[in-house]
Image (cartoon, rainbow, N blue to C red; front, side, top):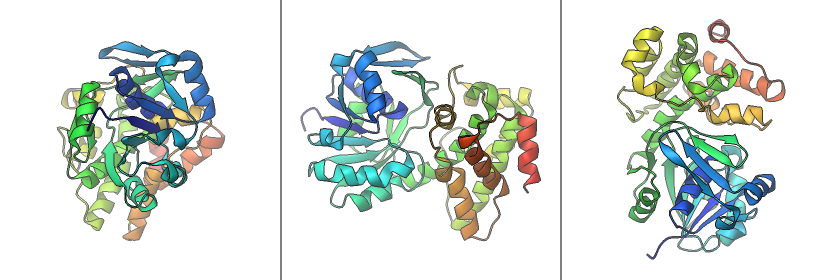
Length: 334
């Protein structure tokens, strides 16, 4: 294949991060997003920042911007980065414009988006992908990578060559279902971070908030065991041990899990960003997944259930919670 062409369907924080890095490396990239978001890029261009590298600025004339999936008609790869609730309508709108040999890659939270895309786009190759690190819009037109990490997708040599050429560390995995279940365990912190109102490093540095995450992860691991699911090990700590590590006193946690705090001061969860901008969150694809899976196996998931309710309340009436108050709230739900 000659140099592949890309389209990003859902050019928000993750989409602009991935597409921006590819565009900066000289790949042809069509950014497809909401009109308001595309207008910002049309006015300001796109700036990519991160604690480990110099900023990259792509002026407006370096960007191909669109609000319709028609812009994906010539793409060899379509990177789907829409929210989970938007996957089905996005796929339906993409289908008439997708080239017969195009590959679709889901870089989304949640467990079921690749399957949803495969159902909606029969005959097309769909790859599961995962972004394990934090990316947030620090200001309009600027997206910031707040921690290191490697992208993961099902194997595709051409895709991985492009990602690595763009300076994006990437790993081919044949166990993406297990990887996605492991990522969900990590993403259970999104709601806690959003309700804390704190940067991720500050929130994870406080034991009470970590204990909230440990409660959620224990419920998730119990549901996984009942369902016969074994999440992949993505870091130095096995998933089954992580709740115990999270519950350690702060000083000991800092020594044992230093890598977990290797986050810069700007990093926050995408759910915090959604609440700040008055957008619906992905709580149903995170805590909601655990509640549903636990119920299917006759298990309770009170901490995840209560967090789901608190985030839904925050979508209409934002409120921040201290670590001790949130921990007491989740324990009271048990």
